[in-house]
Amino acid sequence: RVECSPRAADGATSPMPTSSISSVVFRRAADRRDVTAARASTAAHAASTTKTSTPARPIRRRRASKAMVFRRGMFRDLDERPPWRLDLSADVHELGMEEHDALNPERGGRGGATGGHASSRQEHDVDERDDVGVSVEATVAPVGQGFFIEGNVRMRCVVECECCGVAHVGEAVEAPMRIWLDAAASEPDASGEWDIVPFPRNAEECDLTGAVRDYVRLAAPYETLCAACGDGDGDADEPFTFRLEPED
Image: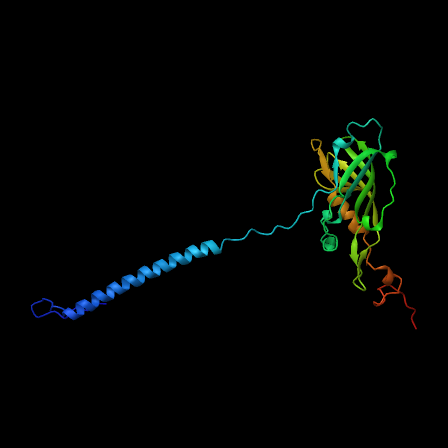
């Protein structure tokens, strides 16, 4: 701030000393340099922030794949009369069951779907190590514009013993399945013992993964134990069981 000298009696302002004028000039020049440097620093900071603070791509949660798919074309050109055979198989992780993902990583090479006449199904001896996975064995019969699918769901996977914590191949979980692929349905529903799954007339395939997952979860045991703990020969504590103790 520059203060002028008081006015003289005739109204004129007295001249400012030369030394005061020089100091004012130097201060204004210094102020301009400070402002210029501050603007440059702000611009550099904004540029660096733009480069370094670019938001990373969010990690998307893995969705369950269409592992169990019914395709209309599988039974379009068959000469045999219904019921027809339907075989579906997939890895455990493909069902989207988070509780089993850690011990059952992706293996690959198992998934598939086949269809044919019901009498053409063959039995195969399977080693326990290769028995891990999910499978559907069912028969298919057309009804109106839809289909009845009736059969069995089976899943076997690696689980952790709730007593000793040992990871092992658990017992197979099996459950009956009755699915009505209904062309007139607009949302999943139930009718008696049949689970209704919408299957529009113009749709070529229908994803059964969610229905199979629900069957498996409903049939899963209350607790999982390894062979040693289940027989009471393990080092862990006695497994939890329900008992009715007599009153004294």
